Length: 180
Image (cartoon, rainbow, N blue to C red; front, side, top):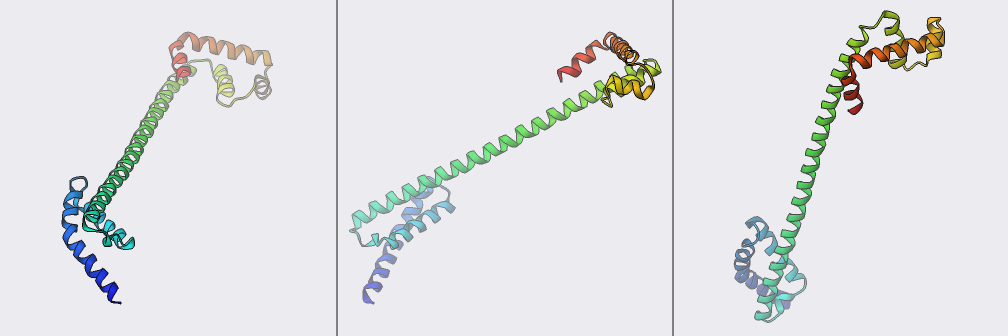
Protein backbone atom coordinates (compact mmCIF):
# COMPACT_ATOMS: atom_id res chain seq x y z
CA UNK A 1 0.00 0.00 0.00
CA UNK A 2 2.90 2.32 0.78
CA UNK A 3 4.28 1.78 -2.72
CA UNK A 4 1.05 3.04 -4.34
CA UNK A 5 1.18 6.14 -2.15
CA UNK A 6 4.75 6.80 -3.28
CA UNK A 7 3.67 6.36 -6.92
CA UNK A 8 0.82 8.85 -6.50
CA UNK A 9 3.13 11.37 -4.82
CA UNK A 10 5.75 10.95 -7.54
CA UNK A 11 3.08 11.25 -10.25
CA UNK A 12 1.62 14.38 -8.61
CA UNK A 13 5.09 15.93 -8.40
CA UNK A 14 5.78 15.22 -12.09
CA UNK A 15 2.39 16.60 -13.09
CA UNK A 16 2.85 19.78 -11.06
CA UNK A 17 6.35 20.32 -12.41
CA UNK A 18 5.84 19.49 -16.11
CA UNK A 19 2.17 20.11 -16.95
CA UNK A 20 2.43 23.94 -17.19
CA UNK A 21 5.52 23.74 -19.46
CA UNK A 22 3.92 21.05 -21.61
CA UNK A 23 0.73 23.13 -22.00
CA UNK A 24 2.76 26.16 -23.12
CA UNK A 25 4.64 23.90 -25.54
CA UNK A 26 1.39 22.44 -26.94
CA UNK A 27 -0.19 25.92 -27.23
CA UNK A 28 2.50 26.79 -29.79
CA UNK A 29 0.76 24.34 -32.14
CA UNK A 30 -2.88 24.09 -31.06
CA UNK A 31 -5.38 26.24 -29.16
CA UNK A 32 -5.33 26.31 -25.38
CA UNK A 33 -8.45 24.16 -25.20
CA UNK A 34 -6.81 21.37 -27.21
CA UNK A 35 -3.44 21.86 -25.49
CA UNK A 36 -4.96 21.21 -22.09
CA UNK A 37 -6.72 18.06 -23.31
CA UNK A 38 -3.56 16.81 -24.99
CA UNK A 39 -1.43 17.29 -21.87
CA UNK A 40 -4.03 15.61 -19.66
CA UNK A 41 -4.25 12.67 -22.08
CA UNK A 42 -0.46 12.32 -22.10
CA UNK A 43 -0.42 12.26 -18.31
CA UNK A 44 -3.16 9.60 -18.26
CA UNK A 45 -1.06 7.42 -20.56
CA UNK A 46 1.96 8.19 -18.39
CA UNK A 47 0.09 6.76 -15.40
CA UNK A 48 -1.23 3.73 -17.30
CA UNK A 49 2.21 2.79 -18.61
CA UNK A 50 4.00 3.70 -15.41
CA UNK A 51 6.38 5.91 -17.42
CA UNK A 52 6.63 8.30 -14.49
CA UNK A 53 9.10 5.81 -12.93
CA UNK A 54 11.71 6.54 -15.65
CA UNK A 55 14.76 8.64 -14.83
CA UNK A 56 13.97 12.34 -15.07
CA UNK A 57 15.91 13.02 -18.31
CA UNK A 58 14.17 10.13 -20.08
CA UNK A 59 10.83 11.11 -18.58
CA UNK A 60 11.15 14.71 -19.79
CA UNK A 61 12.02 13.54 -23.34
CA UNK A 62 9.07 11.08 -23.37
CA UNK A 63 6.68 13.79 -22.17
CA UNK A 64 7.71 16.31 -24.83
CA UNK A 65 7.74 13.73 -27.62
CA UNK A 66 4.32 12.46 -26.51
CA UNK A 67 2.85 15.98 -26.45
CA UNK A 68 4.44 16.81 -29.82
CA UNK A 69 2.99 13.63 -31.38
CA UNK A 70 -0.42 14.27 -29.83
CA UNK A 71 -0.35 17.83 -31.28
CA UNK A 72 0.52 16.42 -34.70
CA UNK A 73 -2.36 13.94 -34.45
CA UNK A 74 -4.71 16.72 -33.37
CA UNK A 75 -3.64 18.97 -36.26
CA UNK A 76 -4.01 16.14 -38.77
CA UNK A 77 -7.46 15.31 -37.43
CA UNK A 78 -8.49 18.98 -37.53
CA UNK A 79 -7.13 19.28 -41.08
CA UNK A 80 -9.03 16.17 -42.16
CA UNK A 81 -12.22 17.41 -40.51
CA UNK A 82 -11.80 20.77 -42.24
CA UNK A 83 -11.26 19.04 -45.58
CA UNK A 84 -14.44 17.05 -45.04
CA UNK A 85 -16.34 20.20 -44.08
CA UNK A 86 -14.89 22.10 -47.05
CA UNK A 87 -15.69 19.22 -49.40
CA UNK A 88 -19.25 18.99 -48.12
CA UNK A 89 -19.70 22.77 -48.38
CA UNK A 90 -18.39 22.66 -51.93
CA UNK A 91 -20.68 19.74 -52.73
CA UNK A 92 -23.69 21.65 -51.38
CA UNK A 93 -22.76 24.70 -53.47
CA UNK A 94 -22.45 22.53 -56.58
CA UNK A 95 -25.79 20.89 -55.88
CA UNK A 96 -27.35 24.31 -55.38
CA UNK A 97 -25.89 25.51 -58.69
CA UNK A 98 -27.21 22.38 -60.40
CA UNK A 99 -30.62 23.07 -58.91
CA UNK A 100 -30.65 26.66 -60.16
CA UNK A 101 -29.36 25.58 -63.56
CA UNK A 102 -32.12 22.97 -63.79
CA UNK A 103 -34.77 25.45 -62.65
CA UNK A 104 -33.53 28.08 -65.13
CA UNK A 105 -33.72 25.46 -67.84
CA UNK A 106 -37.26 24.59 -66.80
CA UNK A 107 -38.28 28.25 -66.86
CA UNK A 108 -36.70 28.68 -70.28
CA UNK A 109 -38.40 25.56 -71.57
CA UNK A 110 -41.72 26.72 -70.15
CA UNK A 111 -41.33 30.12 -71.83
CA UNK A 112 -40.38 28.48 -75.10
CA UNK A 113 -43.25 26.04 -74.88
CA UNK A 114 -45.62 28.93 -74.17
CA UNK A 115 -44.38 30.66 -77.32
CA UNK A 116 -44.74 27.45 -79.29
CA UNK A 117 -48.28 26.93 -78.01
CA UNK A 118 -49.15 30.49 -79.11
CA UNK A 119 -48.00 29.54 -82.60
CA UNK A 120 -50.04 26.33 -82.42
CA UNK A 121 -53.07 28.50 -81.56
CA UNK A 122 -52.59 30.24 -84.92
CA UNK A 123 -53.25 26.96 -86.76
CA UNK A 124 -56.73 26.12 -88.06
CA UNK A 125 -58.91 24.57 -85.36
CA UNK A 126 -58.81 21.00 -86.74
CA UNK A 127 -55.00 21.19 -87.15
CA UNK A 128 -54.66 22.44 -83.54
CA UNK A 129 -56.79 19.57 -82.31
CA UNK A 130 -54.77 16.94 -84.23
CA UNK A 131 -51.44 18.51 -83.21
CA UNK A 132 -52.39 18.54 -79.51
CA UNK A 133 -53.68 14.97 -79.62
CA UNK A 134 -50.46 13.81 -81.27
CA UNK A 135 -47.82 15.80 -79.38
CA UNK A 136 -49.45 16.54 -76.04
CA UNK A 137 -51.51 13.40 -75.54
CA UNK A 138 -49.07 11.13 -77.38
CA UNK A 139 -51.69 9.48 -79.58
CA UNK A 140 -50.74 7.73 -82.84
CA UNK A 141 -52.17 8.88 -86.16
CA UNK A 142 -54.47 5.82 -86.31
CA UNK A 143 -55.88 6.57 -82.83
CA UNK A 144 -56.50 10.21 -83.73
CA UNK A 145 -58.16 9.18 -87.01
CA UNK A 146 -60.45 6.79 -85.16
CA UNK A 147 -61.44 9.37 -82.52
CA UNK A 148 -62.11 12.13 -85.04
CA UNK A 149 -63.61 9.87 -87.64
CA UNK A 150 -60.98 10.80 -90.24
CA UNK A 151 -58.68 8.77 -92.43
CA UNK A 152 -55.16 8.10 -91.16
CA UNK A 153 -53.83 9.83 -94.28
CA UNK A 154 -55.78 13.02 -93.46
CA UNK A 155 -54.40 13.04 -89.90
CA UNK A 156 -50.85 12.55 -91.21
CA UNK A 157 -51.31 15.37 -93.77
CA UNK A 158 -52.66 17.71 -91.06
CA UNK A 159 -49.69 16.91 -88.79
CA UNK A 160 -47.27 17.43 -91.68
CA UNK A 161 -48.78 20.82 -92.57
CA UNK A 162 -48.83 21.88 -88.92
CA UNK A 163 -45.17 21.01 -88.51
CA UNK A 164 -44.27 22.86 -91.74
CA UNK A 165 -46.05 25.97 -90.49
CA UNK A 166 -44.40 25.77 -87.06
CA UNK A 167 -40.93 25.17 -88.49
CA UNK A 168 -41.35 28.14 -90.80
CA UNK A 169 -42.68 30.48 -88.10
CA UNK A 170 -40.60 29.39 -85.14
CA UNK A 171 -37.50 27.63 -86.42
CA UNK A 172 -35.33 29.22 -83.71
CA UNK A 173 -37.76 27.99 -81.02
CA UNK A 174 -37.35 24.42 -82.24
CA UNK A 175 -33.59 24.77 -82.00
CA UNK A 176 -33.76 26.14 -78.47
CA UNK A 177 -36.26 23.53 -77.28
CA UNK A 178 -34.19 20.66 -78.58
CA UNK A 179 -30.88 22.11 -77.39
CA UNK A 180 -32.07 22.44 -73.78
